[in-house]
Length: 511
Image (cartoon, rainbow, N blue to C red):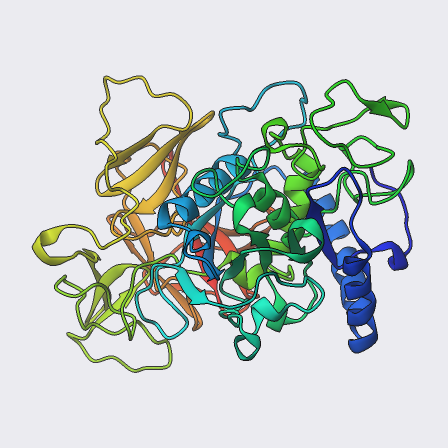
């Protein structure tokens, strides 16, 4: 439903209300206040929209489907009664819902709409806080307030009784409160707003799928909806009558919001997509994002997007202060790699959950960081995943471990989700099948200097670097002295290696 609308119709905050009415005037007043207080907001939002339109067009014509982007989340629980201090289980249930909904593995998915898509976005509770200390990704704070105003945003300010956000360039901040005024379930801030208030807010009765979550909003879809706004999605009806736009080409036009589950509803000359997460239907009715919505969300997270630093954040990795890993392991008290430091032969560093040692010829990979006794660090994404068995038939979505690496079955083969020993998925992406003979690793990752080092069991490996749009940005025939990445802009890249008929692809981040 892509049409032209004026900037004055853009809504900076979106509210998801519990009544069969559109948002209250409080949210629009908040928008007006922000526009009055921030003279540059309108232009920033216009610039983001212009970039998004170009990026979406590129994504629609790209042959590369994209990589999984993992977003670190911190949940700030603000409560007055003990019952409002929701459990870790309820919080985790919400993360589970997000991952199923954004990866289209939700059990209620169906084939009613052919444009339904896997957004290839995942979420995890942060494992390291802004100071570098280990964290559960959850904060809790008592407040005497009985409800919170969406226009005042005091829940996002420590000095006003709330909790100030963690670095919004590295974390998706979620505030879960006892009640939002005006009967609002939740609301979000679009890209382009103030970092001091960036994130999403939900009432505890509409967060997660267990505990205090209440029917008909007890399946976690309020947060799915609000995170969609955070990632630059509009309401599917465009917040207007027929002809209003949500800036997405494959969503049908609708005259207004839908409530309940009116699956046979038609308006504006076509059937309404009431199952879309960006409508106002009940949780049990929602089940999809479209391919166009996927591209719009990913546009803000990829290189050049307004949330690209969040898309590249590594705060899902379990580390201790100084960049080492959990105490007692092989990386204990080993500092993180620093591109500005000169290391002598024998020095050890940690990069991307892996231990390296400086040699006379470069860096030697000593393996994934482990905890005492040789197990993996806390938050290991391989925990409980069975080893690959060549005699087993695996369905799409199945995960296996092979050679200390986690793989997931896709419709086209196996996707490498990275080495075991960290909770970050997607830092090393191999297009090959478990057990490929060509062995390659790249480091440091992220790379902050001019050289990306390559370790391989094969010499003279040709390489090609492509950006997230599939465009070739560099190539060469020898990696023995590393790969010069000084000319690359900050962002995510794929480096492809070919030896005979074997191709390996690694993902790396240039900072």
